[in-house]
Image (cartoon, rainbow, N blue to C red; front, side, top):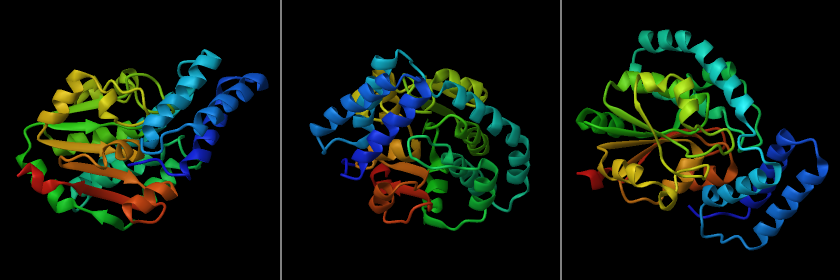
Length: 285
């Protein structure tokens, strides 16, 4: 997926938010905005928003010296999600279609996203999404691939929603490798966040090697590439991973909530729609 003009002010907003979270020094925040603004002038629009976003957060780290601006927020989101986990586990157990309910809950967690300028209430969003109609629902294909899969690669996204990923992984009951970012970027998961979420109890956790807020294969490490190429099934959470992989030629399931107009248009849905979308299913046959 290429970068659109609408993405450019989003980069500036992200830089301002992260800068403000990192430092009270207005001069440093202004320097961040100046450098990101200068970078925008020369951005290659054919690259994905996630790939270009990596450069935004590199600037923030270099100017502020802070490696993980969202660390405290990530910890709070994980704690909130873990407090909800027992109740959500019961909801899955009592539902008519446990797997589909677990998918809904995993997507509900995707509201925890500080890369878009949205507010959210985790409890309210979960309740809403449990009743919300899917804009895209490739569930039958999901069930078919899951039935035949001996290995699953699950691409994580944000800290907090990771706890809800655990619910889905438990319900699938297959060997799962769970991939996270190499370094902190926005509120995306790194290995310690995944461990704090309890994912080490249900999956093998690896770093994809990417420094971007999305899976950019050119930035990924050899271990991840091998897993990506050899996995029987790939599940991709969130908008950043969709940006990086939407034009890939292998079968991938995208689980997300459409939270911005660019992603919504690309998926041919409207903002706040929920999506379970497969690409290239036939290519796995």
